[in-house]
Length: 565
Image (cartoon, rainbow, N blue to C red; front, side):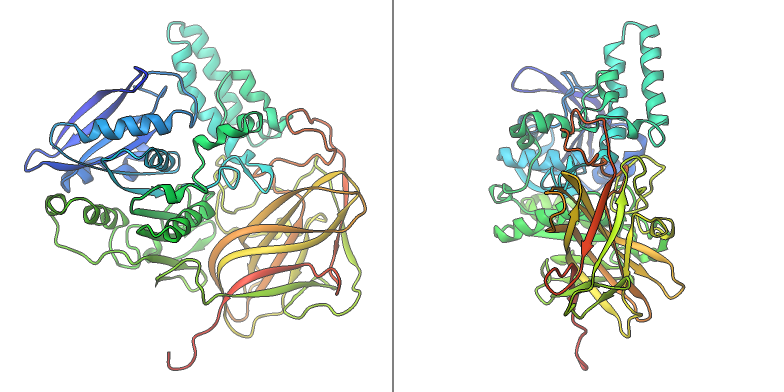
C-alpha cells in the first residue's frame, strides 16, 4: 500500500481541495471508497472510524478529503453550502485516479454522512453506493432544531470547535493575534456548561459573533430558510437511485434521521440496509450511560456476525462491478447483512428483520391518570389536572438521552432520580408489569395542556423503572407551542424511535415538563423572537387527563409470539 498526501482536486470554480489517497500496490484496477469531512483528514480520533489502511488492504483505493475551507483544502469554510457541487466534482475526480476502475462508493458518519447524500443527489455517474452512518434526514429534526426548539446542545460546542481552524487561517501571519483569539475561544469552550450555553439571545448566540465564526446552521436557516436545502435529505431520497447502507444508534442525536432515510429509500424501491445498535453518536461499544448491553452489542462483534467495518466492505463489494467485487475482497466470503439488523435493549439481543417499521407493532395507549398513575385503561370521568411552574431561569438539566453535547452531558440511559425529584417535572408510572412489554418503533405523546404565557415548551420522556426503583431514560421529545393563555390544547410530541423490552416486574414511566437544558434552548415564555429574546418569565403549566382530554403516550408494542412459534 502507498499513501499520497494532499493530492489536489480542482473544483468547478477553481478552488483546490486536497485529499490523502491510499492505494494498494498489487493487482488492480480497484474500486474507490471516498469520504469528505471537515474535521481534518488526519484527525487521530477518526482514524479508527475511517480505517483507510484497512480498506486499502482489502483492495480499495481510499480517498479522504478535507472539505472546502478546512485544513489542507482551499476556499472559505461555510458549513453545508458547497457539499453538493464539491461532492459531484470530487467523485468524478476520484473515479479517474490512477489505478481506479471507475467505480466509487462513499462512506462516513455525521457531517461526512451528509456529504455522501449531497453528492448522491448531484448524481455523478461513477457513484455506485453510499453508506451514511449516524446522519440526519430533516435538519430541523435533530441537526438545527427539534420540535421547534434549537439544538443548542450540539450547536454551541460544535461551532466553537470548528472555529479553531478558522482562527488559525485568519491569523496565520500574526502570532500574537492568533494566540489571543484561540485563548478566548478555548475559554468559551471550557466554560460551555456553566456560562456559554446560558448566553442570550440563544438564536443569535453572542459567542459566534464574539469570535466571528460560522455556526452550525440554526441561525442561518432562520434567516434564509431555502438555504437549509444544502443539507436536507428529507423528501429527496427517491432522487437517489443507489443502494445505501444506513447505520445508527438508539441514543444517537440523528437516530430518527437514520431510520427515516432508510424507510424512504425502501419506499422508493431502492436497495437499502439498516443497522441500529444501542449506540451513541460517537460510541459503538457495548456499554453506554449506566447500562452494560453486553460485548456482543458492540460494532466489533454485532452478535458474533463479525466487525461492522468488515461487513460494510463486503456490502460495498457486492454493489461494484463483478470484476471489482472479485478484486475487492481478499478474505473468504462471509454471510452478509440482513435487510434490517436491530438491537433490542432490555433483553440485549440482536434481531434480524425484513422491514422498518415493523408492521406487527400495535399502537398501544398508556393514559395519564390521577395519582401519578400511567394506565392502559382510559379515564372515564373528570380527574382534575396536574400543575407545575416552569421557570426558564432554573430549567430541568439535560440528563442522558440521544444527544451530542459537551462532555459534561454524556449520552445514553442515565438515572433520572434528580430530575424526577424536581417540582417542575410531572412523573406518571404504571404498576409493575406482569409480563414483558416490547416497544419497537416510533413513540408519540398527546398532551392536553394549558399555560398562562404566550409561548412555552412541552417535553415528554419515556423511562424504564427497574425492580430496584432506578428510572432510566429511553426516548424523549419536545414541542415548542404558541398558546392562548389559559386555553387547553392538544400537543403532539414526537419522541422518536426505540427498540426496548420493559421486563416483567419493571414499570413504565413518563415525564412531562417544559425544559431539557442545555440540550434544547430554553423557551423564555415571553414570545420575543429567539434571535432577540433576553427576558424570561415563569409559566404556570397545567396538564389535563380526563375522558374529554385524554393525555397519553402511544407505544408501538410488539405482541408476544404465540406458543409454538
